[in-house]
Length: 145
Image (cartoon, rainbow, N blue to C red; front, side, top):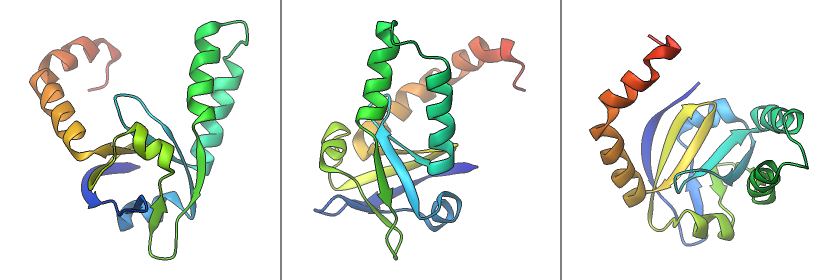
């Protein structure tokens, strides 16, 4: 399971080092795709295949929303190799989309890694922290705890 928060530099070629803990879990190839909430998602190949299968099982080309979402996720996805020192090269169009500059934050979220612009993450986290109690209350019916 991917968990934790790490701040790293992104170089001028859009390379970022994965934390060693994540490297071990993710393997030598990952898929980076546009995410939600102004970040990028990164998946292991196995998890990406599982997501692709679920989306194709539940999708209909007749549904405008499903067409739009699958285009968004798959059209922007890139298979990326992790280099020998644990870096990944974020494609330019994805780095621009997430506004990745000098510092990025890598967040482990169960089966995915999220890649955030440092300021965007800080702002987002502050907003979520303000409403964490009410979110927990809304989700309490799911019987998570």
